[in-house]
Structure formats: C-alpha cells, structure tokens
Length: 104
Image 1: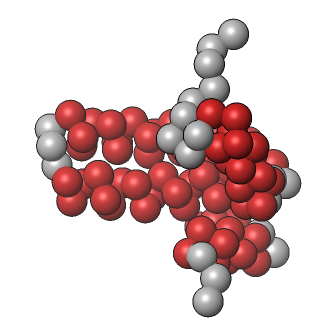
Image 2: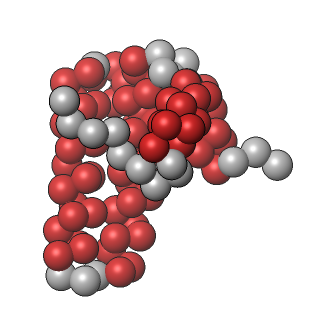
C-alpha cells in the first residue's frame, strides 16, 4: 500500500485532466499559481489559529485541508513527493531528522 500523501498527490494529478465544472481540484489548478498559493496560506493560517485556541480536532481537519492544497501546489508546479522526500533525506543527513536548516 502506498503512503496517503502519494495517493493524494496521484489523485490531484489525475484531477488535473478533468473539466473544472466537474472537479474543484481541476478548477483550482486552472485558476493558477496565485490562487493555489493563496489557498496554502489560508489553510496554514487556519491550522495555526486552531492551535492557538487548542482546538485539536480543528487542527486535524485543517491539517488535512492544508495537505490537500499543498498537493495541488506541488502538482501545479510540477513537484513530485519524491523530490520533497529527497530534500528531507538530505536535511536528515546533515541536521538530523528533526533538525532545521540554519538561517543564512
């Protein structure tokens, strides 16, 4: 069985070929990068706002929305999950799995 992120990415990628009138995902992809990027920011803000008020269920729901919109962004930009995983592997090797790259 594949990872849920990979399945979500694949589903978003397939929806790209659908008519915008039959697929919200196709509509979002047709709207282009500014709209897609805005949705990622909106969902990230909703996750953070739910976290501020300790709404655990809200964070879970909004995190799922954020991941969906992130997959739409990746598809729109031609980024594959394997490219992100490779970046994460590289960071793990240099800074540990929970490390973050230092600011330059």
